[in-house]
Length: 543
Image (cartoon, rainbow, N blue to C red; front, side, top):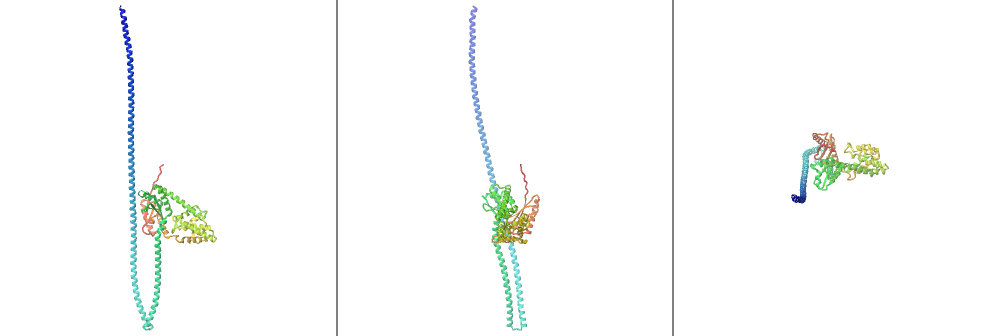
């Protein structure tokens, strides 16, 4: 019975256990599904959170980049404003410097004008004093002559009385006869004296007429010599605008000083609009200066180094033109063979004048005249042309070599093996040596014809150039002098010295010595300023 009862119980217990196990399994499965769903929800939430975090980071980065761009734009704007302010400051500073330079130039010009006026007044005062002294002397001479005349008249009256008495005593004549005889003698004597007075008066009038004629001619020459000198000693360069004058002058005048030192030409910048003037008696220097200035103005870069480079190029171009001028003269005259060095020297005559006459043109003219006359006389026409062309060759270098242009010409033609007939024609064309051929005579005649034609020459210009040449020659005598230039129409001599040979203390002594020598040797109007310049450069090249 007991076993029958236990079996159902066991079955019930087993059923319960199976139910419990099955319920647990079902519940576990449900729990696992819920856990899986919860895990999926958590992963979804994490994914969304991560995406939101990434989006937030991207937005922050974008905002940061925008802030950086704004900051960079602000910095760029700040730099632009600073640069703009600096440019405005630089422009204002340059404008102020230009105004100061203009004021300095105006003050310098006013000072020069005042100095010239003072010199003119001093000169006029000296002339007035000399005239007053002359008038005083003439008054004294007139008084002396009046006294002598009174004394002579008294003696004449006494002599007449004595003669009358002697005539009465010797001739035993009555009064009327004696008076008649005396009157006849006095008449003859008066006629003689009258003739002498008329003759003396005529001579005096002629002398005064010659004097006044010379004075009138001199006044005419002086009134026209200024135009002649200006035409031959001054070159004008046009400017694109007035601002270019300030650039040519440079800071504190350094450009103009460098240009004048390199060319030996006086650069004049005055109130004349849009032009600068180059003044110098040496036509070659003036031509070099003109070409260099035109090139600097066209280029626009004007500073001492550029000026030196441009002047060197202009000097080379002028040297080339000189050789071409010599060759053109040979081609024009049909001369086919001549030493190249002599051709170059001949071309220099293009920039040389003699009494206002261009020497190269004069030489070509003499050559043609001599050749024509030689052909008419049956002489060697080519040799006459050659002698006529070379007769003034010495004038091309007489500023650089001591001696007359005749001596220099003879030496040059002998050096370059010209025919003896040509050498003799050169030596004899001023009568220094005997003429050994008819060609020499023809060269002299042709030279006279070319020189004597109306308007060919102007003596005042030649004297003016000779005085400037003498000024430079005096300065160049001294040891240590590198270059000397006479500028401002001979009112200033600018002397460049070698800094290794002349010290700063020595330049003052040198200026005084040159001044004393000029005062001793030359006659000149007004004053001459002697400026000694000592400049030492240190140049190196970085590689």
